[in-house]
Image (cartoon, rainbow, N blue to C red):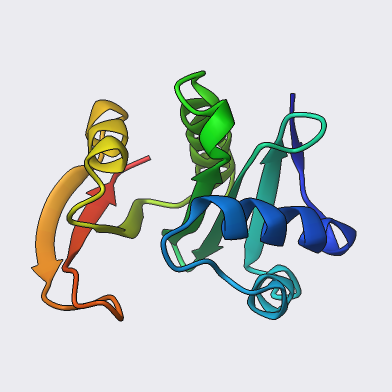
Length: 140
């Protein structure tokens, strides 16, 4: 089950981030994003085990964060969230979408490439710990 997230879901979003992400978004950052009209989020599962947060503005989309709890991985939850996101982007007339992913996050890179994203560049030392970011693009 995937559903749209609302501001009252910020604690669930933040809990998934804290348990899943290398550099998790704070509850305040998530709430600020969800309060923006160009941003939306989805939750997967009940209770929630995964989420995606993304924007759509002026024909461009950005995947801000995608996370699945470690114990719920390898069940196509992230793929289902991406499918929902791409459908939303199409409805928003998004022509190009972007994301940044840690260069050492091989499972995420494989997921994105499997779902049609292509590598377009590198941001050296993008993350606080000095890890590079891989830039990726998709034409929904």
